[in-house]
Length: 432
Image (cartoon, rainbow, N blue to C red; front, side):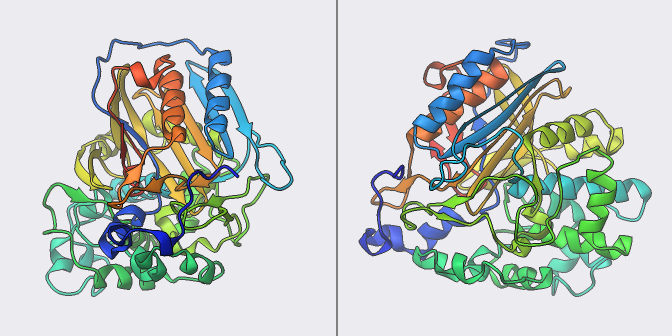
């Protein structure tokens, strides 16, 4: 048993059971990321790949309590791949670096690229109201005020649909996860849940508020202007154009190809953690349903940042960032991509979290230095008496791996990037 200090929901303090506290921890389940305060860009501009140290850092993540982790690091054409731990806690089948993985909200970058391709073709205008393309979907004045750009940079202030789709999360229970394992959600149904939630602000105002609903609507918009499903368009014009061989929107609840199981702890409310690798991902849609490998993710972001998927004008728009609140933390979010500043400079990418799986992908602006990693145990932290997330040894070990991979630093506890924030866009913010 790796889960430490498990708490059942009936033993949680009253503060941790309050709906607002619980939804602050589980809203926008489609992401997990690593953010840092800015550091000097010259600290480690071209770190060499220390293969032994990278291997040891993965082992440290497993030893800290993570079931399994797989990672790929690239630097100027050189590649390192590694894995540590198990893909199945019963059979002890080991994880492999090439495993197919649910990438959650990294899907948003794929969807944004597809929208920006249509912007380049003149079929979509970034600053046009959504109701021009999807009349009546967003009722009232909001449909005229909310633009396509606001969907992509999360300033629409449309609430999320997670509470509507998974109501047991409001009570600190994972029952809805099991109830919906094979349920087919229509995108319009998810949008209806989101529009029933209170708006998080006035459209266009900052800071924005991270919401999966924005990218479900973007998928509906893409389908409307292209005449094919958003999944078909993204597959043909983004995934295939980038030369990705193991990336797809799965057609069934199964993950295609060799993969790990996906263990969900839900902050100790599911004990022992339960496997959700077989799951109907219609609830994530164009906000989070894609599967990929770590090698494909690095290929994708390298192609994107080098201008191979969209033109310079669209890439410039994509990298215009503004503050967006995700898990109570402000991040620098563009159009389906965000930037973070580490001690060795700025990196671009996204991260994703679904039930049982978390992914991170970060690249230097020129695509030369890259890291993508996946883990197979989600929401492994626990809550304190006030409903706040307590940092786990896993968090520190993950940060160590990120900094070693991207900056050549081996100890997050002494790095200039401290304090660090983990998992903001999944509502899993953890400050050191």
